[in-house]
Length: 259
Image (cartoon, rainbow, N blue to C red; front, side, top):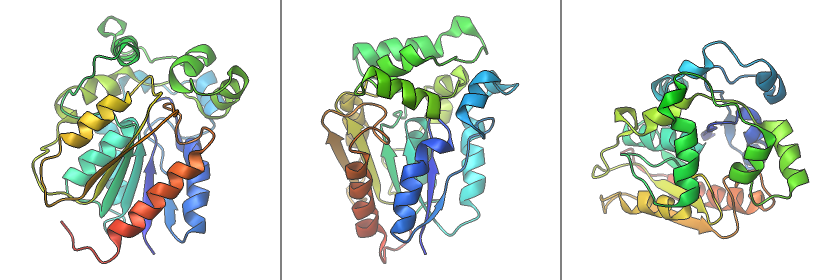
């Protein structure tokens, strides 16, 4: 049985993968849905009582946790969203996965896109003047920036069910050495997916991320979904995205040699 490890991104936790875990379990996969450090538990309780040390959490902490979990399995598949997408790309580059799908991924190597939503949200989160104070997510910001394809009522419900606060240092680290990848090396199959209405990781940046991979002998694919926001994994139509990822994983893992 193939194992899939799902990695959430900032302002989310394992609850955001509930539907995907159920979907892939029905299709015969062993699904593992770990939390980042300081992200385990009910999102509402995590918002009410942010864990001590949350603001000091680093990207290296997240990667090390996921790498330890990956070590318990024989070259699993990884599906990651946002920063979880970058974690997926990093572990693909380390040769630890049989395949990876990075959805709305924070791009490696300080890749930027001069899109107003991207610049604004990145500046607010990474603001150096805020030190190690966590970013406290609220319902209005969640709707405007994270789940902008939803109605106000649906975004408010999604916020209550899934949103967490988070560490500025994780995104800061993504733009530093911890977020660097050699994009010219051979790698396991990698799928990048973007959403056309994403205010946090614009579709153009997802495409730039995809085009930066240079090894012609490695499978690297890209798909952009029109009308989808950063909440692409849970907004209406998520089944279409999950179904495409499922078919891609099936096609790109059966009998493939290790990289």
